[in-house]
Structures are given as C-alpha cells and as structure tokens.
Length: 195
Image (cartoon, rainbow, N blue to C red; front, side):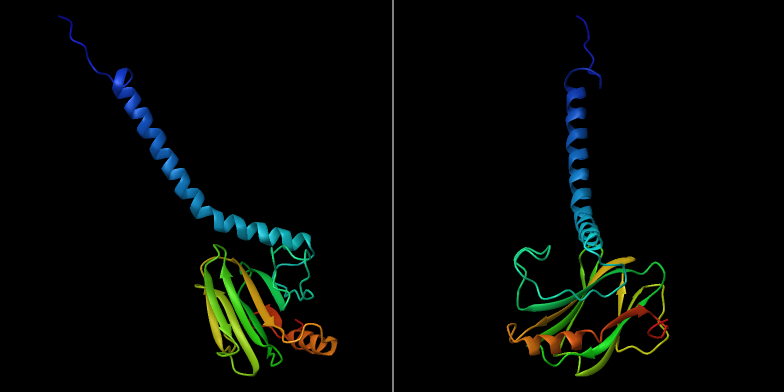
C-alpha cells in the first residue's frame, strides 16, 4: 500500500489555502477601500472647486444656488453659503468676521479630510457681533485671541458657512446678507488682515 501525503501544493490543502488567501485579501481590500472613500470624496470635492475657480485657504462667496449651478445635488435655494478648502500645512488659520443677524439661521461647520464633522456652531451659540475661530493641527499653536479653536487631525479639510434666507426674492435683503457675509475673513493665524 502506498502512502499518500497531503501537501500544500496539491489536493485539498492547496485549494483551502488559496481560498483563505483570496477571502482574507478581499476583506482587507474592502476595509481599506471603505476607509479611503471619505478622503477620496473630499479630494474630489476640492478638485472640483479648484476647477470652478476657488483657491485653497480662501473663503469663496458664491451667489445663492440655482438649479444646476452647484456640484451639490438638490442644493437648498434658500441657503446663502460660503466655503473654503483648508490646508494647514503652512500653519493654522483664523476665520473672523461679524455674525450676520439677517439670517433665519446661521452656522459655521468644519469637516476633516475624512469628512468627520469637527465643528458646528450656530447663531444660537455664537453671540451677535465679532467672532474669531482658530483652526489648527494638534501640534500647531495660535497665539492671538480667538473665541474657540478647532483641532484638525490632518492638514486638509472643508469650512462651510450657511445662512438660511428669509426672503430670497427680496433683492435689497439679499444684498444686505451678501454684505454681511463679506465681513468674513479667512487668514493665517497671527497675521493681520491684508498681510
């Protein structure tokens, strides 16, 4: 009687090892892809904004959305928004301005590169008048006085400011809201406006 040996390169052992390798590789790849999707989507949004003329670390003040005028599907036409694509590689930033009082609702939000929400503050939490929000990485410091700071886990992120309008058809009202939001300045921390 001949002894038959089970080797890893033949028979059931080989196929079991191959199957386990494929399953484990697929699972690891799937988890890695799920972890990368938020980063890739943020990068895609930033690249689309740059193609539309926005710049990194500059606050964009686009007009109120109309159907088909934004990359956001079904954008709320009652929202007057401002946005900035953040990159803290050269240092921390400060968003300052005067909180608008003409909005039905106003908020500022900061999102990390992986789309995690790092900050949401509204007109119910930020008092009327001037405000300053510091945006930095953990190892960075902001020496000037700010009302609050947001610590980002990576260099890249997105800043959104939203104003829900009461009367979007009222031209004078819309002009006053636009003037109020243009008081917002995003700049390098510890530098005066205009430097």
